[in-house]
Length: 114
Length: 117
Image (cartoon, rainbow over all chains, first blue to last red; front, side):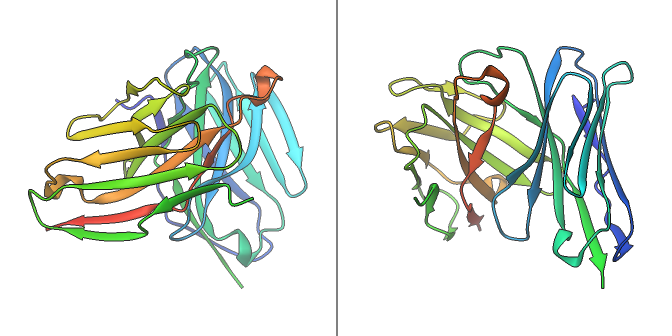
């Protein structure tokens, strides 16, 4: 069983829809949770960053962490065609050595249709 | 400020050939990483360098070697390429800001698409 599970999709939604992307994890030591966005044939770029439990909002994006359920979510409101990309969750325990390694989900491919 | 750069962008190798993937960052980061990305597998860590002068194995190091040439540059070498090494390779570096909550953020390069026939 992988430490981080993510539904690969693909997920296709109409423009303006609310999108929910999710990851589950098994390592209870994970404390830092991130969402990366990866456009086709590009490198991943950091989208959202949360520590421990709770919500964080940034414009149309909201990240939620539920540590009791070992479940994290990314919500995209008023989705746009420019949001079409693969979304990767990533996480790390506190002080995983000086290198601060991340464990990634396999990514969910999202297409927003105009 | 170019961020993280990788060369080459594309490469085709025959089984048994060797090559070196180059990575450089101009952000004065201490830590650097090499990942491979395969369909359905996400990003898997091959090797990392916590700081200049140190390297360590990640999740999938077999068949690879690395060199941290200086603070800016971190190369990945395939000594005898195999078809199983067909993948997209990403280099990343880490900011390491003073705020510990922000110090896990990694910045990625554009990737190298490698095909081994």
